Length: 171
Image (cartoon, rainbow, N blue to C red):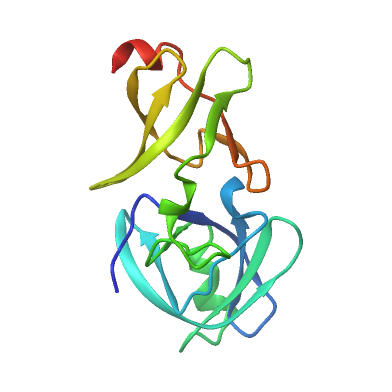
């Protein structure tokens, strides 16, 4: 089981029911598709702690109910409220490929000031980067982080992002 601090699934918002289940508010990137998971890491006091999943059920557009193995009481699980939940492996997309399936996607910002094409995915320790070619022929690295992603349209093969100002000049 590998810890991926760069793949934040969501945050535990409350204990749910009396069987030890929790409600996880999902990050924007996981509102449509949730990967199959056997385990996750909770960030407890700044440290990753592995938890095996007994049950997982979608409960609303941006919520997920998780029941962890060997945690059967609300009193114990309620102490995890506010903890971040991280994936133990990169999510796989419907095509069965990892984030490499984004090669060839068009990347643009909401203001229409930046357009590029994804050439490759760079898996740096702690973060994933998109290696893109701009319309002007420049090669740029962009952090591929859920806080920057506005929308991914798989049909149009487009990624709309909130890019930091001056990203093209930094590279």
